[in-house]
Amino acid sequence: MSAPAIPRAVRERTLLRSLSLVIVGGLLIALITGALSSYRNLQLAYGGYYFAALAGLTVLAGLSGQISLGHGALMAVGAYTSGLLIGNEGWALVPALVAAAGVSAIIGIPLGLAASRLRGPYLAGATLAFAVGLPALADKFPSTFGGENGLTINPSMPPSWLGSNFALERWEAWIACACALIVLFVLYNLVHSGVGRSLRAVRDDEIAASLCGLHVGRNQTVAFVVSAACAGLGGGVFTVVNQLAAPGSFQVQLSLYLLAGVVIGGLGSLVGAIWGAALLVFLPNWTTDLANSFSLSTNVSHNLPLAIYGVVLIAAMLLWPSGIQGGFRSLGSWLWHRRGRRSRSPGAPADRPSAAS
Image (cartoon, rainbow, N blue to C red):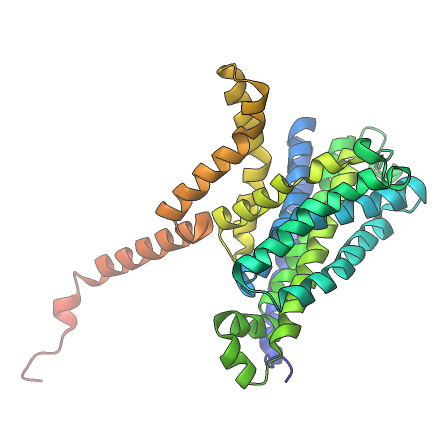
């Protein structure tokens, strides 16, 4: 059975809404980056490629109910793909990023097929093994992947029509944010499509979805492939922004950070992925400043971000179980209902019909 049909008017309205969101977001980014310093533009670029990976993961975990601890490795696939194509083969930026997403999607097919047959801790363990094992391939094939030093590429310079004074960091922020907006556009339409409805049905009750004619394994595989492509695109942008793809950047901690960012930001929420990306960008700087202020040892300061992520994750689950975005949504709903009760209470007695009527 195919995905549930969505009325044409609803599809067009969703497409128009997402397209308007992307256009407005692009214009705002173009204006904001002009007022930011080079360092802040670089941080914005970091947030762009983290958002791409987090958005794919939040759709996978929130929409289809599959937990992956291997998305850091999928980012590595995209990073090394773009590094090889740009640095060794001389590919242009856009084709290399498309290839990074495509190769990661291809890698996501066997992972998705395996994920459709595994549940709970078995799925988490399988994806964790992938996250641990894949970066080690760089050491096994140093002539291709550069070993521990990784692959380096030349900076992607701004086009000449932007002028000679256009900052490289601003251009990199544009690249990263453009990719983030593309991911947002695709995933927003996916979530509100028939495929999104099928994924939610499979997530809520696999047996009921199967009885309704939905192919459970196929839908779960599709979710994993789409999520892998987003992570690969994020990894490709990572290489472009940092001019480096090295195994040390894609250790298992990255996969844990991504999952923590998704949960803290709001599982299943694309806006929550923005909160998660901000956390991934700013928290390491905060923890570094904290470690320096207390003169902590290198070993402690290196593991401090992961420990703080754990504390923040526990606090978020206790205070806002649905994440930061879910907490804001609940707060807004509570304020709206409270305002509604206040506006209705003065006129309530007068609005009631009398017994005589």
